[in-house]
Length: 406
Ligand SMILES: *Cc1c(COP(=O)(O)O)cnc(C)c1O
Image 1 (cartoon, rainbow, N blue to C red):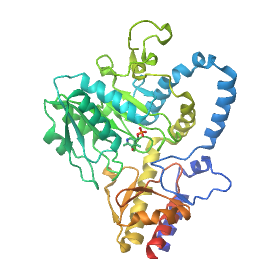
Image 2 (cartoon, protein in one colour; image 1 turned 60 degrees about the vertical axis):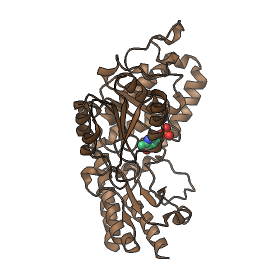
Image 3 (cartoon, rainbow, N blue to C red; image 1 turned 90 degrees about the vertical axis):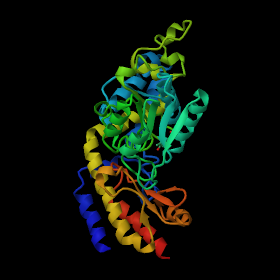
Image 4 (cartoon, helix red, strand yellow; image 1 turned 45 degrees about the vertical axis):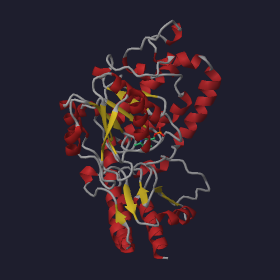
């Protein structure tokens, strides 16, 4: 036990990203001793609080409607480009910020299936995040499509050979998560894309659990469409707007179905008939959520300074430390690791499993330890690399061990 605590101290003092932890906001009476749910809601930056205040006073109050032409109209595109270059491996004019992940999933998946009307199948997996499954069920009903479900192991995730076994000339689209929300499985995106493309299908990826935590190379991997949220590892705040990626080469052939004035070629001409804008702007529909985009400026500055590769390196050290603590401290109480141990297949969080975990949630919260719980018996440990220290992880899991001991 002391060995593992000594290791936390050593890892914290050798951590090249340690200084970033002091850039996160904590109230004076902060009652949290271990925040292990950065994969559900990232913590706010001190800079974000200042930016919000400044935005309201100077831009909203000071500029009023002039703010739209000053710069707000460009935010969805400019911030999308920045996110693309800092975290997504996407060249300019392919990413926009706006709507929620759920709505963007609908818009992009509809655009994809509409582009190949003779293909009547969409492939997805049984353990994808609920919203992905529900949205595709709705689109299938709307369009008379068949959903082909791959049964994925909830403790692992989607494998290329599972995709190869079902994809064919009837497939319009395959949709998976880059990092599985339960197990933390990291999919082989490039290989799965290659398999989909060989059959003439489009590929779409949900990046909610990887953006800001795992390096992403959308252009190099040949991704066609992608969506993700900004309130998890990107620290955008509760309900922060999501992002969508549509590969350049598809922008003239794919049309998203919610044709609003903000995706129009000339929003303020207010003319008859919808004509999509060129480039990524055509992914927009209504007035962009500018207020919700303010925090992203600070978060992307921080991520750009830290570097996504360094973030990933620390993330792997954090999750490997979690695995060691789980093996030594928790396994004796019947706790299992329900996810990949292989660093090449492991995303940014670790899921622990034990029947009865649900009853420990209240005492953990009372002790200031905040993990995430997923039915039926999973505790997700998601240490966000920029805001979490190794000692903090040790404090959280030692509290869990003490509760299991009782
Ligand atoms: C968090 C998450 C979402 C959330 O979608 P919202 O529309 O923001 O509620 C979607 N997909 C995955 C994989 C997620 O982890």
